[in-house]
Length: 108
Figure (spheres, rainbow, N blue to C red):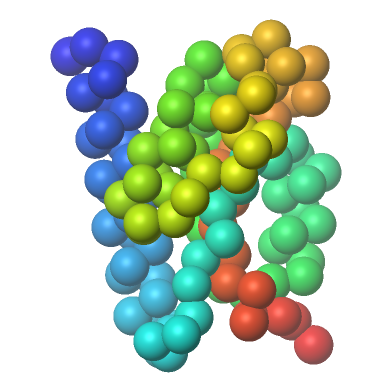
């Protein structure tokens, strides 16, 4: 399996999990997922602020591509920051997670 197939299959599984989670927690039609890259501290901060969240540990070499593939499958536009990050920048910032949350689902 080449890298593109791996990214595509991981994106497909992640989006499947997002849809199941949305169904399980009764997301309304206007609710959506925000998907981003995070390091351990960022992931923990998001998990303290929002529920539900869905995170996946990802190798730095494919993190940006996987995020782009997930956003494409969710029909979301990639943010400018993701397009400028390369593997070295991802490693420097210690980004290792793909984290999804709904901005409408704050923990009170």
